[in-house]
Image 1 (tube, rainbow, N blue to C red):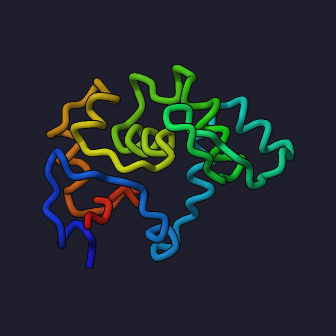
Image 2 (tube, rainbow, N blue to C red):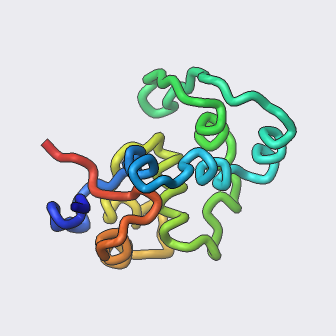
Length: 143
């Protein structure tokens, strides 16, 4: 049963990328993440840059996270490029990229709308809660 059938999300319900969804649905999440890289980083990894565990320091909190170098490229480089989320980026892709850029910190449709000014919170909520999970984006577990 889908998480969406257990929880009726609102514009204040936090969403995140549920990594187990990829395994359960036989979707290659790592390939999907690589597709979010900017052209420069994609080329570097395609040319053999190793994928390894690295430290990434959250610039807002100073907290240190262990992430793979593909995610670190998104966190430290790709998200700052204008084309990372452009005026033509589809909504689900924009949400996925925003969650990646936030190190998968859960964000509500209201918070996503503040970052993705092209869409309002109700539109984001409608797309994320219509019943079919896209790219593992679902409500985060709440205590």
